[in-house]
Amino acid sequence: MIFGIPLETLEFLWLGALLGGIAAGASGFAFALAATSIWLHRIDPLNSAILATACGTLLHLTTLKPLWPHVNISRLLPFVIGGVIGIPLGVYILAFTDAALLKVALGTFLIAFGTYALFAPSLPRITAGGRPLDGTVGFIGGVLGGIGGYSGVLPTIWTQLRGWGKEAARGVYQPYVIVVQAIALAGIFLVAFNPYSLKLLVAVLPPVFLGTWIGWQLFGRLNDRRFRQALAVLLMASGVTLVL
Image (cartoon, rainbow, N blue to C red):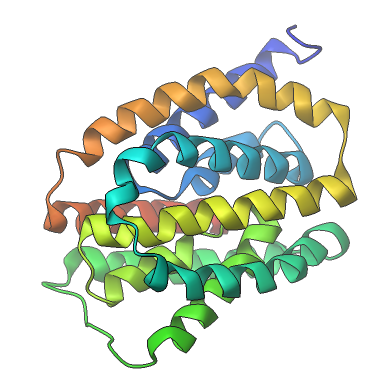
């Protein structure tokens, strides 16, 4: 037992943290989806959401500096504004309602879209809607972020449909995830803080950062096409974890 946490629980926590770090380091999203699929076998959904949101915020900060030249503030801002507005609704759903049905619906969508994106020769390019539609996507991402750290899923898909390259796309959704998850974390802590969550967080940080480093090395080796395919596989796998 370490930090009052049984060793059997720590093994699940470390594995989830490592795999989540690799997924997020390589793609810029999917930490929560990868990690919680393992964590939920040993810890409750509320602590899993706290861990996913906190770890996701910290690991994305570690890779933001080399990505910063690709961050376009004017392109990013509508997503962030929408996300901030959506967070309170997501936190409310997490704390006071059953979000299981929403997660199943999201998982089904991710499986369908990921399968299509993997096998389609190219994705359709959406140029309509401009910044207001970007903000709407950001809003829905904020709701999902408040529910359990899933804020990056829809913005990631949307940047692919906008036709942006891997650096330009990640320069939007990764800073977005940092802002939205940091605010969501504050909201979750206000309604559901507990000392046990802090112990869990300290315990998982080493494998989180190790996985992030491994994932970042993989990101540098992917061209735009391979990056799109890798995202498609992650989306499919993420959908499966939400549905099961």
